[in-house]
Length: 100
Image (cartoon, rainbow, N blue to C red):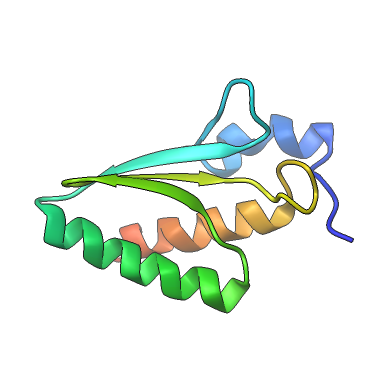
């Protein structure tokens, strides 16, 4: 069974994942990305989809033209888990590598 993050891990999220925000009213984290155009945003989503499949952990997301919003939570755990932190780090690594 997947376990939710404990209070100490939740408190450290701002330091661990500085670009992600804990969503108010949900046990989830979110981040918004902006790209030069729709094609770049869609390409980024395709790359994240490959990561999600490899990790068997799929984000909730929204795309409007050049913006992509990603929300991560672990439904099986009823909130944030280490799987969300791992997925967020993998997504951040794509961005840090300059992958649109």
